[in-house]
Image (tube, rainbow, N blue to C red; front, top):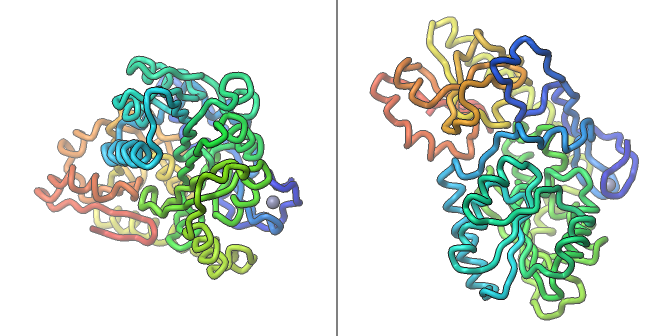
Amino acid sequence: MNCRHCNHSLTKVFCDLQTCPPSNAMVKPELVNHPETYFPLKVYVCEQCWLVQVDEIERADAIFNDEYTYFSSYSSSWLAHAKKYADEMTSRLGFNENSLIVEIASNDGYLLQYFKEKNIPVLGVEPTANTAKVAREKGIDCIVDFFGSAIASERLLGKADLIVGNNVLAHVPDINDFVKGVKIALKPNGVNTFEFPHLCKLVEFNQFDTIYHEHFSYLSLTALKSVFEKQGLEFFDVQELPTHGGSLRIFTKHIEDESKEISPSVAAMLQKEKELGVDTLTYYSGFQEKVDEIRNEFLSFLLQAKKEDKKVVGYGAAAKGNTLLNYCGVKANDLIDYVVDASPYKQNKLLPGSRIPVYHPDKIKETKPDYVVIFPWNLKDEISVQHNYINEWGGHFVTAIPNLHIL
Ligand SMILES: [Zn+2]
């Protein structure tokens, strides 16, 4: 197996989470007697370009199919983040009715709606037909396909003033062709921004539950520099964001475009990564041990609660929770009674692998559990405030990452 960017042979394992089904493959109740397919989940680091990556074990179109149940608009903090981005970018770059904003993985139009409100033309590129349909109902036009050099040449050649992608860069199997598509679709003075969870936060805060099959790469600025430069694009700014446990937002432009100043933030972040040791193997060794410690801590907590006859449930049928539950080997009718999720698309289905049932959040009020484990820990504050009524019966919220914490 070779590096998806530089083709160097991959031999160094960063983290091995054994096998599990794809994290977003919720099981419908009528399929409860059907088997699920388990795939290995092993992460490597390339010693030549430092891209951290999983093996491509399944074709991406088999994962991002019409059963894909992630609808962005269900998180209010994420919507606020999207709106802020639209406001900031519009004032910084001065878009108007002659501009074109392209979003890659535009989902249900959660972000483009804020540009559309300002009468700036928008176009989404979204591979899942069911989410694209919801976007179209909001009047947001979408190309239903995977973004790459082919779609860029056919439909977007040099047309985009802004190409935005939030939490998509890490989900791309062919990262070289994807970035080549950006190069093709951008106007000569166009701007591209991508947001992605920062590898350095994953390592620092033990965020191993952000590892799943749909997430092909775990990105540092160091590794991306080589990916973008190979396609003739360069960074001109980088921002640190609190989203998803610590993300980076990169700003790129054509290397030939001299109209933009390169912010000192770029060199500063590269230097910071160098000081952490991102370009050394030592940085990546020892992560597996931390992962196993977290698994043991979480299982000890669940077993102790069981012994004390306490009821434990989960909040959020997110991919993160599935990685954690499957690596810990927790199953239905065992240590966690059920999981609730605000999205109707997930309710009354079973979690992949663990097969824990998913219900409407009202189930918590009915059953008054002692502990509610928040799986999407990045939304911990929002969820614990929204559901603070569990205090009425002495319930507690729990998070497992970066370490077991009972709130
Ligand atoms: Zn490489």
